Amino acid sequence: MKNKKEIKELKRLEREADKLWSEYIKKRDKRCIICGRADIQAHHIFGRWKKSTRWDIYNGVSLCVHHHRFCVHGLSWSRVQKESFMNICKIVLGNEFYNTIKNNNVIFRPTKEDLIGIVNGLKEKINSIK
Image: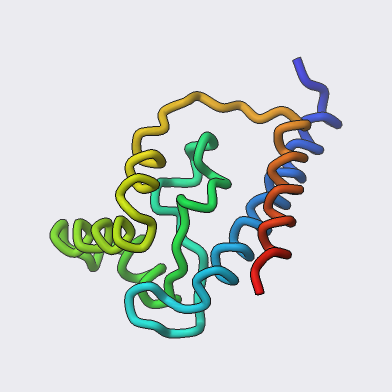
């Protein structure tokens, strides 16, 4: 069993990975994939609760504040609109990556070493974007 200090460090690394993941997605996409606005937020296609894909760069797209808060996470989209959004994600990511992320059902409980690797990998990817 982990002690409080170890748990606190894991949570800190998770927050750092979340921040870096978001930074990478926004830097990569530059604009909302739906409307092209520049005021963007990073959105997980498949929920961030699923740690096996939480920090996967193919599990994210950039959305403007409107599309992120009021449409995707709000109640204003119909089932058809949500299906259309998922189809846009398939186009942006490509079917292969989309399906890989969708079907990744691995139970993943990251260790400190896993999270350090994720953080370092995201930093490298951010630095590689021009």
